[in-house]
Image (tube, rainbow, N blue to C red; front, side, top):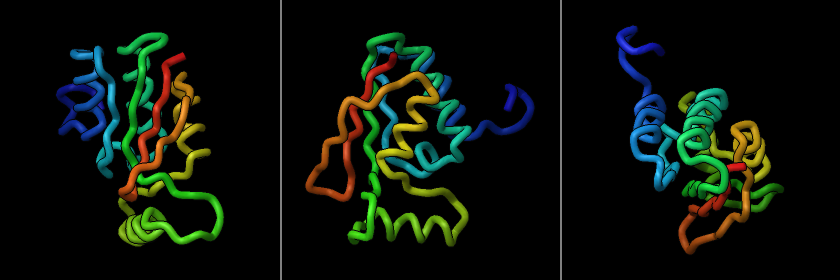
Length: 124
């Protein structure tokens, strides 16, 4: 949404911050940010890539859904968000597609003792 055309969406606020302070780019858990529709997520990631430049690191802290039928809290959250129509959780391959579309490559996904993982990536 263009400035002055109405209220900014949350991801647009983060895009502006990335441009102002690109030295540490991090996309952190929160349905307003990472759970936005794919086009908005790619737009946010492209802003991070542009601000950070080649070689900059990007960290995303999210509940990464495992593939297959194994139980995981991210799958419960995903079903809840589906029912509410507010977003979705993603698998590693879905994150990889989003990041690649923005010119960012996943280096690794680090599991934590919590339901959340840390996606470490580098801007191409």
